[in-house]
Image (tube, rainbow, N blue to C red; front, side, top):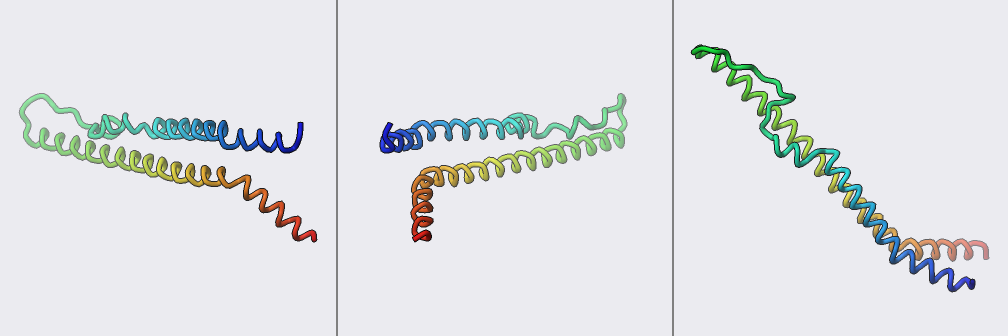
Length: 128
């Protein structure tokens, strides 16, 4: 096998099959992040009480007791929504950072053979 055919096969793999594999890894990683942060599940139960904490309404007509229970349950729902929104926000920021990293890796992958060739030539020039 000649060195030119090996180089051709490498470039063919580098710019065809490897692209497919990189996109597949990226798709799997984004799926992982989406499910790790449970974004659809957290948005579905956005106004549920935090960790199912809350007061139970007592039987009977006790206005201060009903008002106190309503206030505690409302606060727990607001706190639950804030915590869930923070987790969803952090998950979305993580996904954006992962996407930017993927773009950088993709650009580096495209330029990598030329960078390696340039570094080899630069090293040979230092030897001369």
